[in-house]
Amino acid sequence: MTNIKTVSELAGVSVATVSRTFQFPEKVAPSTREKVLAAAERARYRPDGLARNFRTRRSNAIMVMVPNISNPFFSEVLRAMQETAFDRGYSVLLGDTQGDPERERTYLDFLGTRQADGVIQLGAHVPTTLPFPRTDDENVAAPFVHVCEAPTPSPFPSVRINNEAAAFAVTQHLIAMGRHRIAAVLGPKNSPLTADRLAGWKRALEELGAGSDDSLIYEGDFTLQAGQDAVARILAAAAHPDAIFFFNDEMAIGGLQGLKEAGIAVPDDMAVAGFDDIAFARFTEPALTTVRQPKKQIGEAAMTMLIDLIEDKNTPPQNTVLDASLVIRTSTGQAGKP
Image (tube, rainbow, N blue to C red):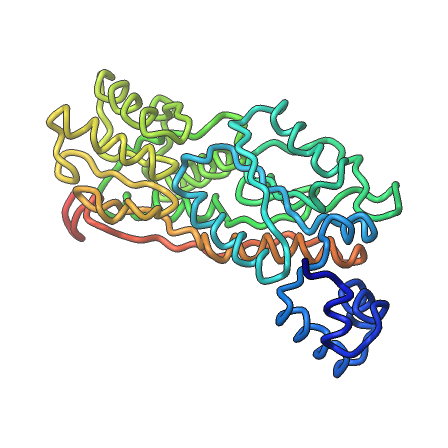
């Protein structure tokens, strides 16, 4: 079995030098470091990660908590996080919380037991405290970054888009297309996304003269079924809207199916818009107008921010707001047509 002694013999250095190279590479001369790493590669030697973690009190693992792993929006964000973590020498532990605070506490315990060095929260819940050490200083909380559903302002470092401005842009577009009764299908009640997007919808209607009407607000939960159910409630009302703004693409896709089954033509009878620009949005019939979130950039920025916090406790906290863009497709009609 290959061991550290084999590497030392191949490299022509002492066992202590090999050990120092893997534990504290910055303290070894570059030429010596190169010889040791080359010898380790030839010998197919890998240092004992558990022992190293015990010494450094690091796991080199990141806990990422996601509220619903089946939501396709998160897949691109998570892929970017995984790639960024890998490039920085970290692995990713994924926790599907399903919005359950008890599950979140279980995953946060990975920090207390040093199975993870920091956590990224993709859901809405904000922990009141993070009483877990990130270094030998037991009084320093573990690094935490809130992503996508961070409140405004956030008590933690965060990465998000301006959801209020993006929702305003969607509603403004629908009004420009001649729509004046625009229903809003919300996300979960406790989500900052819901509050911000609702604020953007209302501001656009009020500022652009359409006038907001609370009877056009329908509850949802960001799932396909919620979109279809919302359409059933909308069509059962006495007065129908001429457009529906779903607060995410999954609900919009479910809504398109519900409208199709009811014989409602989109966009001729009803315009439809979503939010996120998931991969399926351009393949719906008709193709879905939506807000494109920079999912890859969100994942990269969040993971970079967290690892920087792990590796330097003096890194100042940041609240990063990335740009989103309106993607106009055929579900909202052609210019000049209602």
